[in-house]
Structures are given as C-alpha cells and as structure tokens.
Length: 248
Ligand SMILES: CNC(=O)[C@@H]1CCCN1C(=O)c1ccc(Cl)c(COc2cccc3c(C(F)(F)F)cc(C)nc23)c1Cl
Image (cartoon, protein in one colour):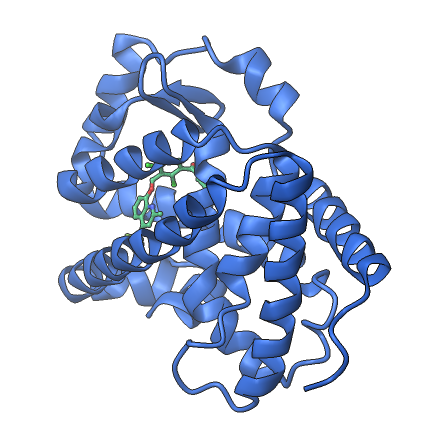
C-alpha cells in the first residue's frame, strides 16, 4: 500500500474536516445554547399533535431534507470525496447521510429535559405523536442521549461524522479500495486527535456507536417504507426530490 500518511498530512486533514463541519453544521452551538429553554407551549404542542399523519411526516421530511443537504455539503468538502466516482458518492450519501443527521441531532438535544430543537424551539417526543411511530422517536431520542453522554468536542464530532460517511463496507461500491484508503486516513486522524485530547478510551465507544447507528437507520428506512406504502401520494408528490432519491 502507498506510504503511510505523514503527520503533517494527517493534521491538515483533521483541520479541513473540522472546518467543513463548522461551515456546514446548520445550527451553531452558541445559537442552540441561547435557545435551549425556549419550549413549546401546551397550545403549540396540541397543534402539532392535531396534525394528520401525512401532514406531520411532510413537515419532518422537509426538515430532514434540509439537514441532508447540509450533510451533502459536508461530504463534498471531505478531502478525496469529490475524487470518488459519482455513483460511489451517491452510494455513501444514500446510506450515510441519515446516520450523520442523527449524530448531528445530538448537538441540538437538551439532556436535562430530553428535548430536541425542532421548528425553532425545543420539544420532547410528545410533539411527534401524530407521526404514528413512537418507537422510532424513542430510538432517536435515546440515541441523542447516548451521544450526549460521550460529550464530544466539535472537532471529535466532525471526525466521527466523516468516519460514518466514508464507510468502505457500504453495498455496491465500485471503487471500495479508494474508500478504504480515505477511511484509513480518517481513522489515523481520529486516533491522533483522541491521543492529543488524552481521550483514547473514546475510540472504541465511537466505533460501537457506528454499529448502533446502522441498526437505528434500518429502522428509519423501514418506517419510511411503511409510511410511503400508506401515503404513496404524499411521498411521490410532496417529499422533496432529494429525500425521494436518497430514502425511497
Ligand atoms: C435538531 N434537528 C434535527 O436534527 C432535525 C434535522 C434538522 C432539522 N431537524 C428537525 O427538525 C427534527 C428534530 C427532531 C426530530 Cl425527532 C425530527 C423528526 O424526526 C423524524 C421524523 C420522521 C421520520 C424520521 C426519520 C425517517 F423515518 F424518515 F427516516 C428519520 C429521522 C432521523 N428522523 C425522523 C426532526 Cl425532523
């Protein structure tokens, strides 16, 4: 294999991943901190709970599609990603973007009252009752809680998201070797950063999270499939095109 990456290359790679994350994170931590006690009123919660299933799904799909677009922008700035074939870029995003949305969701989660940032305020799972998938929401909130427990810095979060995306084990990759080499450099970055932060113990916890993410996201795709079977018109007429391309 080619000469292992030099330390300079690794530090430059770290810096570019962290910069890309900061520039594409959709919500800045300071903004979220300032809003963390802005909760929905009983009336507002009731209004969300009174929405029909497909109305609430549409509402969330728009939000999730926005989030996915930020993840696409993040991916494009990962050194080497644009050097991959178009098909491999779509394959990595098709399977990895929802996982990164989930990881990023933990940045917008308040563990003190188990609320998440949604539509400009913080709400709990009760807000999403009309979606008709309480188990998915519980899983999303539990995952956010478990990510918050790791207390990742933004730099560690940035590298973790890049590792979630650059996954050589995704099905139907054309140039698996190239993704593997990118992945290896990113793994060296993460261990270099954790060593610098004196937090090597985080390494295996983060790799465990990757497998939890994958099972959680298969639950999501299952839910999305269930929804599109029941409300085919909504998915095919309203869901933003990118969402359809990536998740149906
Ligand atoms: C901080 N906010 C956020 O992170 C998200 C992304 C950016 C905007 N946003 C929200 O507004 C948001 C925040 C929290 C929750 Cl719980 C939700 C609702 O989440 C979902 C509702 C329906 C389906 C969802 C599916 C399914 F099944 F389609 F794959 C999968 C995921 C992961 N979330 C779903 C949303 Cl849409």
